[in-house]
Each structure stands twice: as C-alpha cells, then as structure tokens.
Length: 297
Image (tube, rainbow, N blue to C red; front, side, top):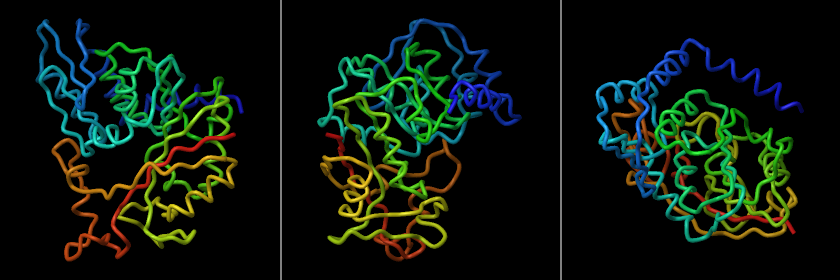
C-alpha cells in the first residue's frame, strides 16, 4: 500500500464544504506565546491579550467535542467524555519516556497531549476524521507540539513507515466487523518488545462468547461484537499475541459520559433504558469496558 497516495487523497477532505470553513477559521487564529498545563484538563494560559469570543466562535464551529476537557485561556470546553478518568485509570500501567507512541483512533488528540508529560520520543495519531484533526489543529496551534496527526486508520498501521514501542487503541475494536483482523494489524505496527493498551465494550461471563447486536448497541449502529473477557483474550491469541493482561473493567457512568453544550446531541442517559439503567435502550447489558495490555513474544 502506498501511504503517500492515501495521504494525498485524504488531504482533499480538508476542502469539503463542511470542513473548509473550519480550516479558514484556523488560518485566522492569533500567533501568541502560551503555556500549557498537562493535567486532567489540558490548559492553556497566556500573558497576551486574546479575543475569547472569536476563539469560542471558532471552537464551536468544530462541534461536537467528544474527548477532553480543554481550557483555552479561560474558555472551558466541557467535552462529552471526561477522558481524564480513562487516562488516569491507565496511567499507572505505562511509561512512555523516550518511546515511539501511536494513538489509534486519536480523536482530537487529548490523550496525545497528555502523553507529552512522559517525554516520549515521538507521538503519532491515527484518525480518518477531518473534523477531529481540525479540533487537534486548533489546540496544537497554541501548544506547538511535534505530534504527528495522520488521516489514516488502523488498517494502514502495518504499512506505516515506523514501528511503535507503545500503541494505544481506546474505544475502536467494537467498531470493527473483523476484530481479529484489526488486532493483527495492531500487532504488525509494534516494534520488537512493544506493547498495546486497548479498551473495548465487554459483557460479563466466564465463557468465550460475544454479543452481536442486531441493529444497534446503546444507539450506536456500528458496534459489531461485544465480547466477554475470555472471548477478547482468545481473539488476541488468534491474532498472534502471547501475553494478555487484564488491567480492569469499568462500568460507564454519567460521571464519565454525559451531554454538554459542546455536543448538542444525545449522550449516555439517552442510550440507557429509562426504567432500568443496567440495560441499554435495546435491552442489552449497559456499556462496560475492559482494559487490557497485550504483547507479542
């Protein structure tokens, strides 16, 4: 696969009529000196004067904002997901210092900005969304990091020019109709001795079974399989991994995912059975995530 050809074709996405105004707005952002604080909220501050009304207008052009939160010079972007909760859950398990790191399905880059705390050698994000890259570009305009954002998907990882010491793949696997093929692609992106941190929807059970929703799961139409942890482990083994470590499971609650005025759409409370929050609106078990660390050899 010629990735440069893919890149050239996907660069045209930035000219789509729904994306072009965002790119034009990015060109008008002021050039200022800023300081970034990489805590639970990725926070930017400056001693210079900045037009917050214009900045908010630009940021709202890019809605919905899913991952965060961010504080841009006092403009708080209260994203749908409290991504700091997931990050802090995983943080004790990894060390990124001096390593090449990839984030598959990186969205607007919240996790990648947080990775900078560890001083990695390189950070590359993969996400085929011109909207999410525009959000990233807004934040990175002020952060001025060396993070690389690729409009590529997990299927391009085996052909990428570099291999990675650490790969994060958070909330992607259940969107794939062939999860074992996706895990194989992740494995091919690893450098020798590398490791992958992955989370996905799971269901309870000791047997190697998977739920296959008929139409949607939690109102998400592109969820194909929701496995037990044992089924997830078996998928990983079939994909060539030799070490599968369960880091924990977490039930999704409104503390982590909720509607805000930065998304203007439904969120978790609308996806659950109003009479029984232990079930989705379709009657399936409510969203729970399993977190694993997987390695080869």
